[in-house]
Length: 216
Image 1 (tube, rainbow, N blue to C red):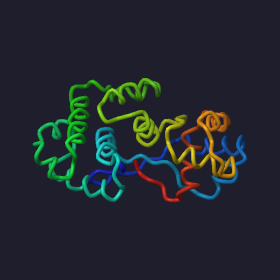
Image 2 (image 1 turned 30 degrees about the horizontal axis):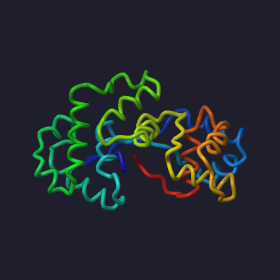
Image 3 (image 1 turned 135 degrees about the vertical axis):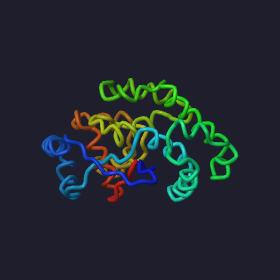
Image 4 (image 1 turned 120 degrees about the vertical axis):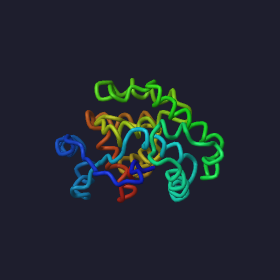
């Protein structure tokens, strides 16, 4: 999933990144080793909220390549991808772009939530993480993992720990337990040293598995 739309947007990095790296390198031996390996690379956000979530729906349960192909076709249907414009699309046209019946339903529900103001986009900056997650998982097709990815990659919240993320669990296993299987409680115990920058530590754990960052 990538937050970029048909028009390229300028990437924005979080202001807290440098402080977070210093904190993590001081508190955690693995972070002290990992962080210097990736130079100036950091978390970046590129798109708007609706596009980011729409892409997450399109990309569910299919490969990154297939998701990109379907997204490219879907993105050609409206003049601009907005909630109001998606609600004007014909179901047959959306299906012809490669979307399943269920994903069409999910995209319409997402658009309805944004168009009606059920999600409080304008006040998200002042809301805590769990309140935003609660709003997002009320939308069909969006679960906690997607909501947490949104918090990290779009809102750039600094202290999100996505324990449902396979990459995070695998990365903790590899870097802290010599590859042994770890539980959620093991992962939470490791992450205690990361607060208040769990999002940053998670990003570096992901990079330890795949050096190329993914845009969300």
